[in-house]
Image (cartoon, rainbow, N blue to C red; front, side):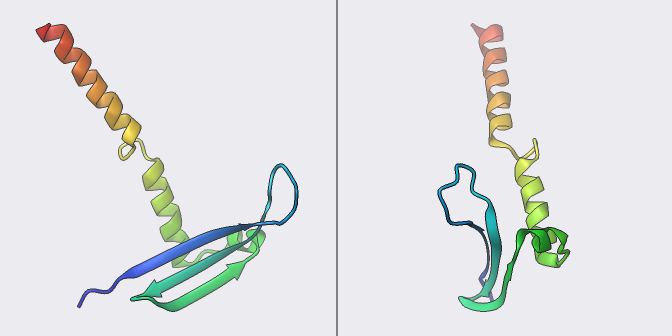
Length: 91
């Protein structure tokens, strides 16, 4: 039986007319097959000190998306490199 797991992490900005909006809080929701199984709202200072499994997953996913091995621009550079090499060798 397949289950659909959704993790939503929303950073809520402070209301106001400031040029740089500070974060008022972070809201995290975990849903399994559409029903909420976990809900958390925390201030930024508490959220940064938190060390639960959802935070570890978020940090790991962020690191993976910023990794040079998984980056789209790196793949474009590799394709660009091979294209340049092809043009130099076979032109």
